[in-house]
Length: 513
Ligand code: MSP
Image (tube, rainbow, N blue to C red; front, side, top):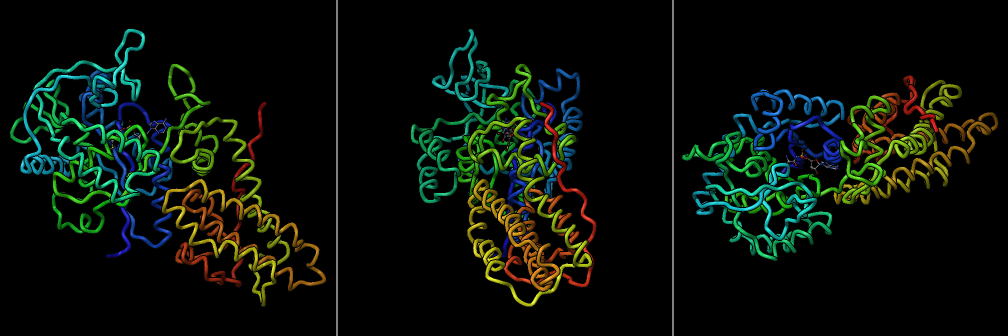
């Protein structure tokens, strides 16, 4: 087996323009995808749009558009967002594509063949906005309206002929899978939620609808369209050219290593998806990671509260690396986290401009003035130089482990700590004061700090790729020397080559209050 890694984002409903929640899921996945590449893995990173179902059909009707044309337009906005967020996705799947139809039809046929599908009548609650069925005990009345207790979304009573998937018969197998694969659902608080739900007993799931037509028709019964979640979840294998299980991508990348999702869609990914796969006799993904919600000033973002933070506007004003860094530094991954413009500004100033940015800028200008703009060659490192470098280098295995456990906050905290220590080392070693009496010592200090800047830049590369690449580029660090594994080998600088100009990495934000 090669070092392959398959990571996905949820596929987004293109029912409106992309918002911060979408940006968040995608940025998280992008960070892990980039990190695995730096670790030397052959990564496939997938994102896309989820285009069928009643929610989209209604939205298209509201806009007086044919649903396909409506999706074509909005899906473009999500494609644009991948560029704006600087995502490194290798593919973008749309559920209206032919490759996806083929794959969903095959899944359906497999479920029929295994005896997991039967025809009956559904009567119960359905939320169009969640595209989810809810049991009676999951419904409450708020201001005279029935809503889901789980999501707060309005629900309608539905009665129609429907195909069912025998979800109930998979409870035991699912529970065993969760038990045998301790890290299948992360963080573990989410795992307990899922286990409790499954332990209560699962009901069979309605997997087709007849009251609207915007979906993939059930093979051999065109009156029905396939339930949008069975349709959507299958995207993860459609992109690998399933049903061709001999296809090189399918063989290389399935089962997926990780599906990154928001906690609101955990039930679909941690219960329905593995049950569908088990029934279809296909391998299960290794991990489902459910992140928390981004709140604005402690509240859910909503038009009526007027607290929506538009990622595109923020990126225009502050920059994409700034937003990426802020979202993952300040929001504890896995939990809900509040964001605000004021905190974003503080974070940019304190962590990026004053810490990492300042470190790079002051070292670059010192080298320009005092070292002919070249990273000096050295003879021997002192104890304090080694101490600075070794602390980071010896911690590489732990840092890799943190990322592989999705403990992103601890990872960033540690790396930012190195940047802080490096600024302190630079101040304390005072290369400017030894420059005349001990130029060799000055050169050693500068080499050490350059080595450390390079290492920190590689470690932060998956989080703030644009700025760190600028630094590595300006230091003439070749692409092949930018891998995590490379950190431990000293000497990748070209001492005869001048540094390139380094523009200001992060502008400080003036506070207007
Ligand atoms: N189409 C489904 C996913 C199908 S995956 C096979 C869907 N789409 S969505 O567009 O509604 O949401 C996509 C993702 O955005 C989810 O992971 C959801 O958790 C995330 N977010 C939406 N709002 C959010 C916040 N305010 N905060 C963080 N993420 C949230 O669900």
